[in-house]
Structure formats: C-alpha cells, structure tokens
Length: 317
Ligand code: SF4
Image (cartoon, rainbow, N blue to C red; front, side, top):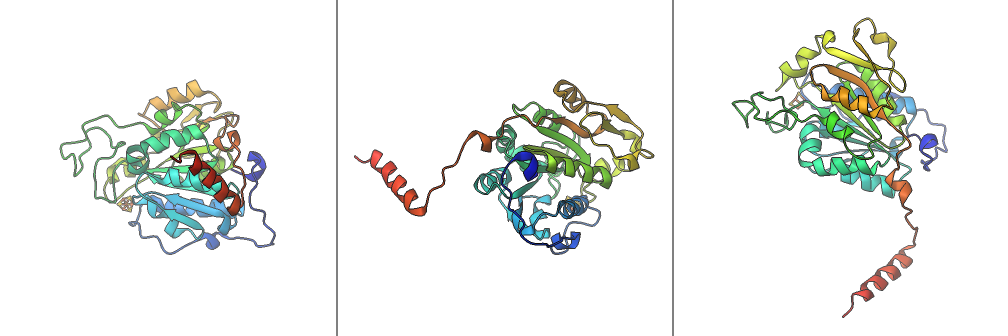
C-alpha cells in the first residue's frame, strides 16, 4: 500500500514530525483479558510507527463484532460501521481519497457470513488496502454463537449439539476468487510473525487479505488457546516471496517450502486444515486494481449540479 509501490498519490508529509507507537494509541481496549485482539492492536500500532504514517491520513474501518471495536483504540481516523459492510465503506473511502492508508478489521461472522458477498467482490476489485480477518471461529460479541468458521461438532449456544456443517475455509475460498492478489495467514500469539505479515500486507500494492488466527479465551479457549501451546502444530511457509523471521526458528521448526507466486501450490496448502500453516500463500502485484481501471473526473460543485440537471432532463416526461 506504500505510495512508492502503488504509484498512487499519498498525502505528502510537509512536516518533520516523528511518530512513536504511543502516538497511535487510543483509550485502553475493553476486550477480555487474554483476548488475541490486544495482540493485533499492538502489532498495528507498531506497524504505523515503523512506517511513520500520519494519523490524520490513516483510516481503520470495521463492521460489528468484538474485533470491530478496533478503530476506537487507534488514534487515527476510524469508522465503526455496520455488520458485514466494513469492506464497502473502506472501498468508498479509498476510491474517494486514494492518498489515505486504509485498514479494514473484521471478525469471522462479519466477513465470512453477513459480509460474504462484499468480501468476494472486494478481493476481485483489488482496491489497495489491508483487510484483516480476526478469526476466533465463534461469534464472541453475541455470546458464543456458531460462525461459518466454527469447527464441525463444536458446541455453541445456537448449535448446542455441535456445529452441523464442516467449517468454511477462508484461505481456500479467498484463493479461489478471481483477481486475488495477496493472501496470507498468521497467528496473533506469534507476535513476530504477526508483525512481519502485517508489514508485508501493507507493502503489497492491491487488496491484501490476512487471516489472523485469534484466541478467544472467553468462549473458545480450547481452539487456539491449546494450539498456542503446541508449536509442533504450526508449519511456517518459507521460500521465494515469503516471510522470514529467524527469531522463530528455535521454536517453530516445521517449515514448508513454498513460492508465493505459485497459486496452485497455495491452494493445495490452504486446503489441508490439519496443520496450522502460516505465511504468505499467494502474492501477485501485477493483478489489475479497480482504481487503476477507471478515472474519476474532477468537477467543481457547480459542474456537478449542471451534470446532474442534464441527467435528470434525460428522464423528463
Ligand atoms: Fe475477545 Fe472473546 Fe472476549 Fe470477544 S469474547 S473480547 S473475542 S475474548
């Protein structure tokens, strides 16, 4: 999303301000103690500081859910939207103000369920932004309801005998969408990998989709809470175009060789949900971005009114 790589006009900094992480910190987050959302918030603030993004030119957009409180805790612009519509709002923001850095934060219900149509087309439109799916595999805000990514058989308040259907696979689905340009997965309990992934997503020119496996100690402690204690269950993707975090080598020893330009291999890796695979599955910056395929004419308010009147006249009877 950097101005240099995408060729878009980003807001120029005409001052010598230097931002620290604290400059992006809003009020104390009200998520449960131990919630993985805290970790993602911290990584996002670190990223903004590293990239020295001006808070007034940065926007966090969210929908509804626990993670969607995210914009409240960032000292940037933010839009806490409505359920499933974060991507539509973010697309409007980016198309209208291409110089802004736009981040979208969604939960699994928000993105994969009610927002599924928007998710599919946002991937295809490939508008330059970072989309974060904080996936705790449950509806937390509404007190443990089955979400599309809840594992089959997992008991919830809406399906007390266990989730009826096999869980949706967000990576496999995203990799199947025409014009997908960046698909990655990370885990919030591995902060170094999380940060490296967010950084790669930000530096990607186009729509960067990142699924973040997220612990919910309140309702699904046994899902990722257990996985976080078992490094052997994790496989790190490494290879051309991938992320390399040497500091993790001593703990995360399982590696999978993968070239991030190989879509067929990315799909094969994503299909197998028995291992927790983390890294960049696919990246292709040559894919067309919607904002490049159209030019928005610039008109004064007076010209807009004239054009509008002319359009109305076409339908006069
Ligand atoms: Fe986090 Fe779960 Fe608490 Fe929601 S219910 S704030 S996802 S721990």
